Image (cartoon, rainbow, N blue to C red; front, side, top):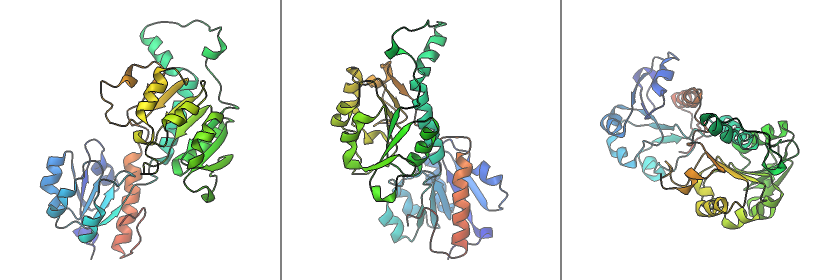
Length: 322
């Protein structure tokens, strides 16, 4: 039996997100507290009926969480949770899938615009107090997006929204997804993942927006990078390991494509020794695509809906995993 709201205690566990403060703003009257470190979560997890958490979760907390009935993941990814152990304890689990789809798509479009308009270089020049002169070489100038082709790898919520944004800039969009029968989702054409290497030569921009799965790990292979046009741009807002990072580094070292814009890397934080840091044709943001001022409230929308469902004894949850 799921506790009534007057008997419920929620633990919010995140090192930075203001989850408890945003939840309190809704005046639900439900008891809650926030922990900011794993050590504090470990000490207090036994008090909670519901834990709202993502990267701070460890499965060795399960034996200590005697009251736990439900975990609302703060992130879309749920690989960190042992489904078997939670199911054995009859603990429900839901993801935050889709919570930042719009934000990530907007970030991808921002990266595309930044590279096309050479904004990272402009910012560097500003710091140097250097006013760049006009450029005679057409291949070195800022570019326009109209008429360019964007290849979107992964046509779920993020990819489909990115396709709509790209169409607003008069771009042609080629979509790739695991099951093309699920629809084009705003792309001009839709294809299978196995067609990636065949399609990248057509693209001016190749954007990864798919989930990391065994099938997509290393999907952007050395062969895929080699097939890209020299004038093209690689964009990754998916997960670092969807791309073969060693192949990406060799591609950028050799100047084989125009640029890369990365919100994710294979190892995060990106190690200081990575050559990606110092490459002038690589633009890096620190996995911030989905982190917006609305993120906490978007997660809490899902949490509140799931608390209502659990309180009514419903078996189906929004973004249900268990």
